[in-house]
Image (cartoon, rainbow, N blue to C red; front, side, top):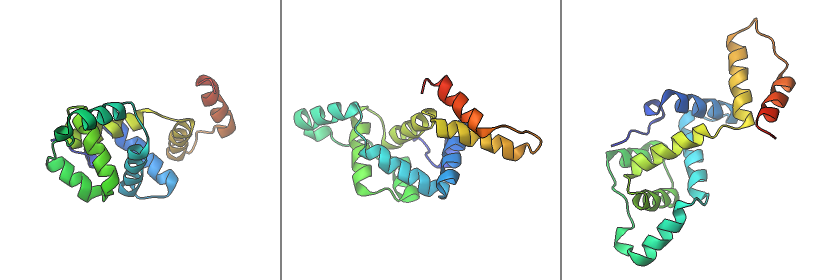
Length: 148
């Protein structure tokens, strides 16, 4: 069973998710719910495998629903549509539902954006009152480094 409460994720992942939640003005769990719903609605490569399995092996449509999966549904009040998408994707990946969702959250946090970098730098500035940076220069530098 993979634990998927925000406190049970790797520290770097939970830090990114909490930072994004603060920027969105949402409690962390509500932000993660929104993130998971968005991820479920986004087409990903494994969806082709899901379709294939639905056509060829309809009896294998669901992933293992472990205690972590039940906690996922309760903890984040995940909509049925998102839950069913993740269940099918987890089965296609031969993973339990909680392991699959945990992996998705970690992957999402690793896909940092310019905004993520700026949020992290602002957090450093808040915790280091003597440090002064021109945020516009920071933003331009991050964009330049990413080729944007």
